[in-house]
Length: 86
Image 1: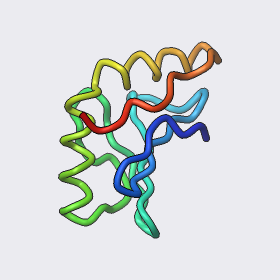
Image 2: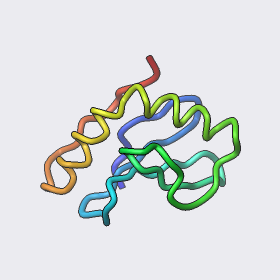
Image 3: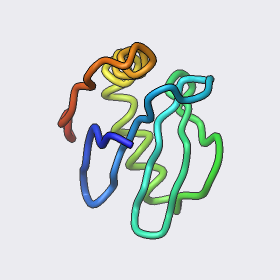
Image 4: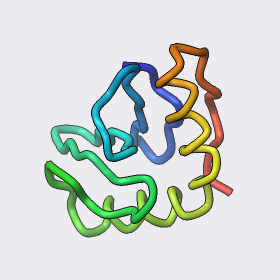
């Protein structure tokens, strides 16, 4: 699963040919979750409140880039990486 960003030890990943709705994967230590790109809600998994807050804040700033990467992944195209914390 390609890593598209890493900040404060939080990994953001996207899968090629993943299921809808558009989402991204988050890993932080033993915590794992799926986050919807459009609504920025937790779809599955668990993140501590602190980590969830940081992920939502980051994703709010990068929602357009996340959706572009989602569409690239669906087309099997290379993903854009390293849009970090603003």
